[in-house]
Length: 345
Ligand SMILES: Nc1ncnc2c1ncn2[C@@H]1O[C@H](COP(=O)(O)OP(=O)(O)OP(=O)(O)O)[C@@H](O)[C@H]1O
Ligand SMILES: [Mg+2]
Image (tube, rainbow, N blue to C red; front, side, top):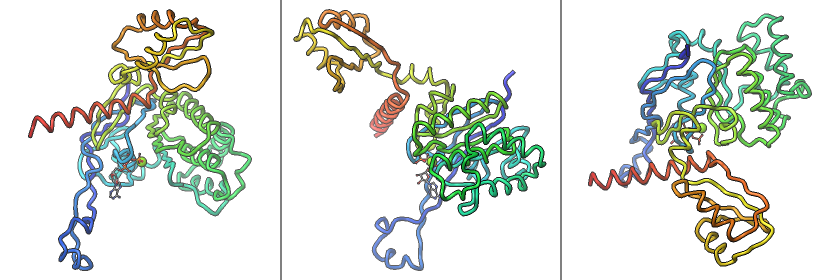
């Protein structure tokens, strides 16, 4: 039986922000030192979802969609305007703050939880005290995390002197130090090189398997998602636009597949040119082509035509990239939104 560990219902967050001067009348602009007009910015407009114990859930959306705001509410940093959050056995991030913080870990890729000027190991000691960990538990846990993330080499170095990848690996180790049941990761791979990303993904997979940690992750790197998550939630302008498996998401929104072909000889130049014009995408490698092939057309017919104009050496058909599918989804949603607006007017 699956076990729901996080239950979010109709969660909303509004920010009150000062009206921009250009939106105020001239006399109000003059008075703006004494007089402020406010407007409401709806950052999260009512999201509802559930997360199961042990799941790695991808929380996706374009810049400004409300991802970080949702995570801040889930971790008790921001108070929701309305809606409810229920975690583990009925814990609320605000009402049960003490108990709650013992159960969760947080990483904000854009902000650090470790002290800037002191050696990393001293920051870890501080966490040991905050979480009230026994020396024995702490040492054992630290050994494990340090090995998994390879951070032992710079454990004595002040945080500010570390590279971005080293910093992030330390942040991750710190957020897992008390063996939390749930970890929230807001862009944990931002700005990192391929090697650091691989280390982090491997770590998350391993710890999730070993300890059944529930992980909610936001990222703009779709390889993170493809590697880690079976299920995703895609939000758009503060509401849930899609919830389900990565596979079904692609089936629902993908329009094309990519076909790569390399050949030894062109047997029908004219026909090849026709295919290039119809489906071709940029490809600068000699004697090879890439095509973006629409899923609603017959791939068989296309391949037959291809065979009739080149002597194929190698051919590969790629699943649509999640990144492209998300872009396609937003395009489709926007078109539909505009259509609805038109009908209304
Ligand atoms: N403290 C705040 N005051 C006013 N507006 C805010 C505040 N925090 C966020 N917002 C606004 O709320 C919206 C959602 O912001 P949020 O940071 O949640 O987006 P995001 O999905 O995390 O985007 P990104 O991918 O760029 O990190 C944005 O329009 C942002 O400008
Ligand atoms: Mg964000």
